[in-house]
Amino acid sequence: MIPTITPRELKDRFDKGNKLFLLDVREPWEYALAKLDGSHLIPLGTLPHSLGKLDRNTEIVAYCHHGMRSADAAGFLLQQGYTSVKNLVGGIDAWSVQIDPTVPRYR
Image (cartoon, rainbow, N blue to C red; front, side, top):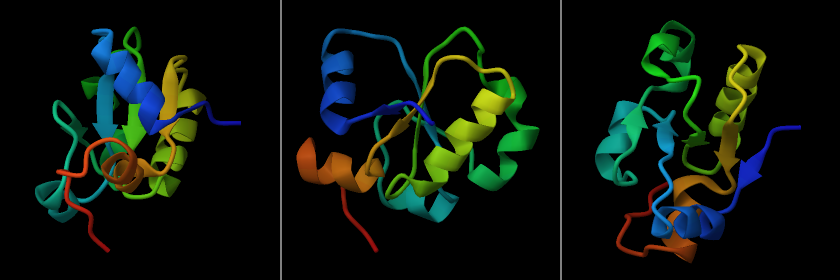
């Protein structure tokens, strides 16, 4: 089972000043439309070749549009030995609906 975090839990963690690595696994065109501040774009297809960009000692929160690709990314990272990885439930779309309506929604 992939560990998850809800948009509200993520917002609360940010508000407390927690340092998290936001891993955006969407495509560059999606990232250009909408992103979470401070996130790092590593499209899912390039993740296996980009592990050197990730710190195994930092908590990673993966997100995508609705949470499916980021669940795959989180599962992959856990298989690679990363121990502190979570998937953002509902992705950036849920973030926009539940937390920050200024983040554009798209199809």
